[in-house]
Length: 252
Image 1: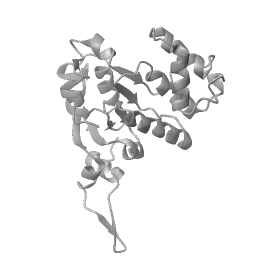
Image 2: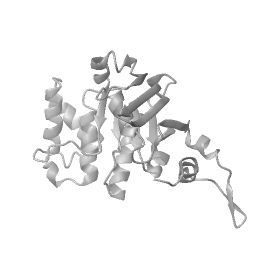
Image 3: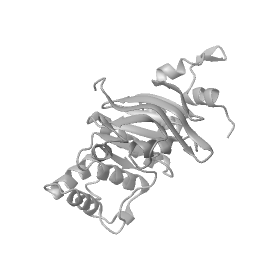
């Protein structure tokens, strides 16, 4: 892990007609870390990811990915990241291995079969590699989806609410895969509305609310924003949920 920022966002603004979604968003993500962008539904998390992945143009502000400007160097930016959305983008008719081989061939990489086998092993899918994806569990599909995103070794991966709709066991499987990404040096920008997900995974957490980043820090730093509570004379440290609800409120 280094202190070098691989994602830099400054003054990002975006409106949809009269609706102002982003009102000046600022944050940096260090190389080889997991950065969680936390917020309620409609907070603008996906809008940030779409701008960073060159799918949407910001109204104002700047953003760079791997040193390239998303507005003026979109081709270089696209070479630097992979994007995994809320639903697994895998072909259910093909086997897990065939999905991986297909992507490797589309990217004109040498030895696509070897690449597929290495990723199957890395994500604990070797035994299921020859089976049609239609037979996979939700967690297995998501792990395969993340594996497909890593073909070509992109330095950055965007995970936009990757555990939406998954059961608890499948979520844990995905969490383990995400942790492994950072351990291998990949920079991860994770958007989520699940507080426990941010708490378990992120090196740093930013809360996006009403178009602004209202807090950005480590879990320990965020917990220091609230005093400990005492229950029957036992000190109880605040949870990330306590911090989030105190800062954002409970109104939808």
